[in-house]
Image (cartoon, rainbow, N blue to C red; front, top):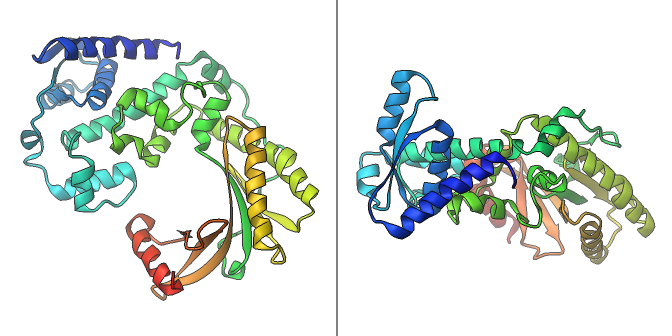
Amino acid sequence: MNNPIYHQWQQWESQVLEWLNRSDEDLTLPDTDPFDRVILTLLTVKYQIVYKDMDKETAIAKEKKQDECKSTVILSKIKTPDVITGKEDRQDKEKLLDDFTDRLLSPDQVSNENSTEWQGLEFVKRSERCLAHFVSQLISANTAYQEFIREPSMISPVTKINNRVYTKKNDGQMFLTIDMKSANFASLQQMNFIDAHMYPTWDAFLSTFVGSTSLFLQNKHLRMMCLGKLPAYNKLEAFWTHFTGTIYQTVLCPYLDELGLDVRCIALEGDEVVFHLDASIEEDKVRELVENLQIRLANESPIIKFHVQAYRLRAFHWQNKHMCFARMFIGQDEAHFDLKCVPERRKNYNQAYADFRTFSGL
């Protein structure tokens, strides 16, 4: 990336690496500005070092009631997790990480997943804010992105279709779904705001700035939070909606017409298309359709990738009061499924999943 934000990152990373290779003493960095400290926070995540004097810095910022204060940052190779986290409430830690990952983690998962990089509640809160701010600034500093947001929003070539898929009347019906993978990130790649060859995936892009820390990489919620901070995000949404509509017109409909299959589009919105498949279509034909369509889409759209799946919908009353739906995927192990419309999904999904397995005899 050829922009001033990335160059600023490179300069700080070089300085930190030089220190890591030559000294065991703490690194004192006086007169850092707020964005310097954003970068330094991420470097402590990437290289698993300690950002010290955070409490003092926070107190100074509050006293001055501004974010533009200069501050001295101290980086240390010595980890003191007992000192940092000893007084923290375990429930506060679990809640913070649940919010951070958008998954409900057990106490053991919290301990195991974060034992090597945990630096305290304030550090995780700070890292989350810093990463979202850094990624937004990095991408929006791109000259091409600035030109993009000055242009009018793109308009989809097709009319939105929004029939309900998850309804009791569709119990037992077959569907074909085509949805864009990581739509926001893929759109940035397609428009060359992010180099798709250098950074083929979100993980590859993010690891440049946070290393291999699983807490950050295995975190879809974090991607949504970071890219959702981009200016004129609605224009990015309009782009992938337009792209999906174009794929629908130029690839999906012609191919399905060519096969002469009895299908009907029941949903076309945003980054997803859903077709209803007639019950007369044999499952072997459905498997073949999924495989061939996946290949055709990969050829037609090598940068923006689509995920093609076929499934049979199963409706069930969870706990005798909640209408939920299982997508039983065709072409894979028949026990492979996921659930939709689970109430309080983050809290209840695992239990509902286990209950449906028992209910279905899987």
